Length: 186
Image (cartoon, rainbow, N blue to C red; front, side):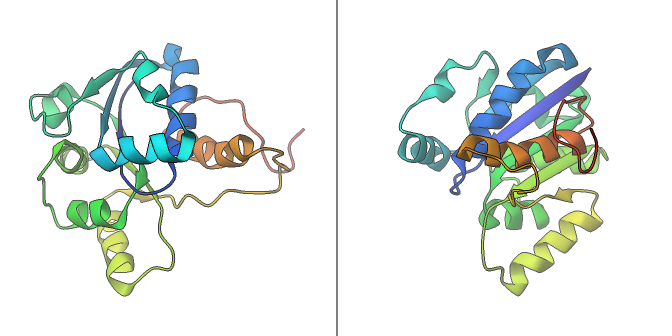
């Protein structure tokens, strides 16, 4: 059973956040808590990219981006996994330098200091040396950088199926028991 934080950042890639929330809903038997925090840009991009505000329809605990009273703002709440999906280079940079100026960066700081699982689904190309060094810093601190790079070997037929190849990968990294395409397995 997992306690999970999902931070939805403001970079492009709302489809990844939507599919992650959909799959976490399907995997509710494997979680005891799912806390969600969205930036203002995340809400804007969701509406712009997906054409709806369906993020309002999920039965998860949503927290304001500045709500430092959220349980996962402290290590004592024992949230074991945090996804930042999608993760902008700005959020990544603040996490890498320990700047905890909102709930997303505070929660990431907590997850790292408690030696729990932080998975950043980065969305940027090309990368500058600053981005790469920030990724190195987070990796050395115990975080996992998992760029939103879909795989094609399962021959996904829709944008949702293509995006799910990324989400399934991060759910695997978090230790969820999922049914997904596995290379060269029947």
